[in-house]
Amino acid sequence: MPAASTTFRALTLSVIASLSVTGCQALDDAGQAVGRSDLVNDFAARLDRALELTYSAEYQLPGGRRATIAQAQDPARSAYTWPGGKLTVTADATARCETGTAKAVCTLLAPPPPNARPSVELFTEAKRRGLVTPPVVVGLLTEAALDPQAVIKETDTTLAGHHAACVQVKRSAGDFTACMTTEGVLGSFTGEVDGTPMELALDRYTDTVDGASFELPAGAGVVDRRTADS
Image (cartoon, rainbow, N blue to C red; front, side, top):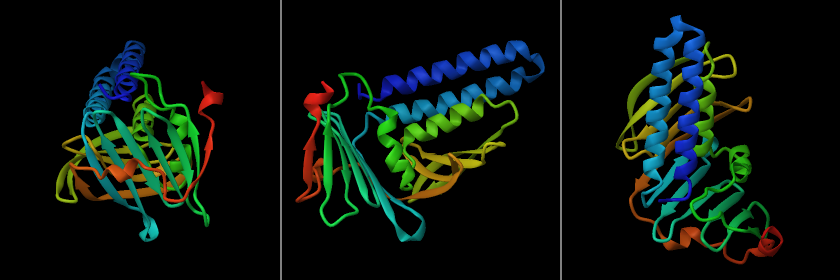
């Protein structure tokens, strides 16, 4: 089982449990709560299944910028690239790379323990640079499901030739729409994240991955902190 799947399942169960308590306190909202928990559970389960896939997804960002998410199995490894940065997670190390300078610099951290997922904090820089990752989407769905004033609606669309299910959320903390392909791959996102407007859309998807996706940028300087982390 890929490293990240356990957390997604735990998060989904936590949301459902919280919604059950809310339903007991407000019986007139019980039907709405059940719908919210089902929707969050469905989307989290799709993301969970996607962690068992090998794929490469390219995304279009505003201003013609691009980002990618790549995943492979046996062994499980993943890579995220965005304008000015890259994050790779393998059995040997978690590498955070700054690529927006003349010479890329990568910091090597200890890899996640077996059957555990990378810390959510690792995706902070990706989010700041415009790449909304699946863990961020799950977090936003969780917040929306627990917000009794949020309006949640499911729709369908097609992205890069792939059917996708979408969740439209209207809430005081910021509206957003997230779409996922039938395989469970993040297809698009439009909305606010931490008060900042963000947008990305799937431009290309393949079920194969170039092994070079998980390598450090050519010529990058390396700072190895794995011993300090252990």
